[in-house]
Length: 144
Image (cartoon, rainbow, N blue to C red; front, side, top):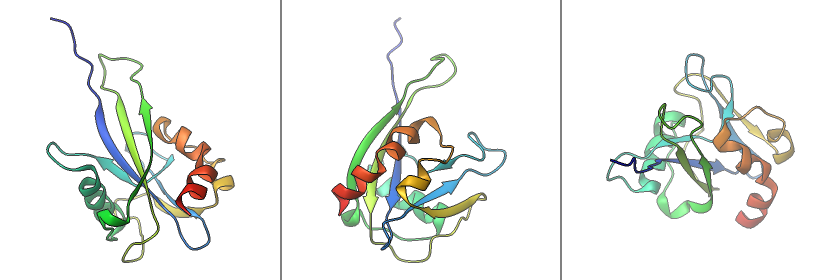
């Protein structure tokens, strides 16, 4: 029987502060992509809407609340599996957000930081975040 390709949907958020900086989260030791900087977010559970998944993930990771109405779709990024037998490819649905409640802090280990697009482009990031980080200036301009 032929293998039907599937992808694991993940969501991420580009939190934008008043100074036009974005928040990135550093992956904690012991996790896949440990030490790399990424947009906060995570996997979409079966039957879960993407924006609802993002609100849940951000609350769990950063301790802040975001509303679906404040999320604007920015782009989709794909991570084709190099070894299809090892894992399924991931597809990142990335949203921008300028409004949240609370102070972002890292609740699952690692670190968080606010970066200009230029600074973010010099950070090591996982494969799914390479294209979005490279396009941050255009994404911020479109989100203005």
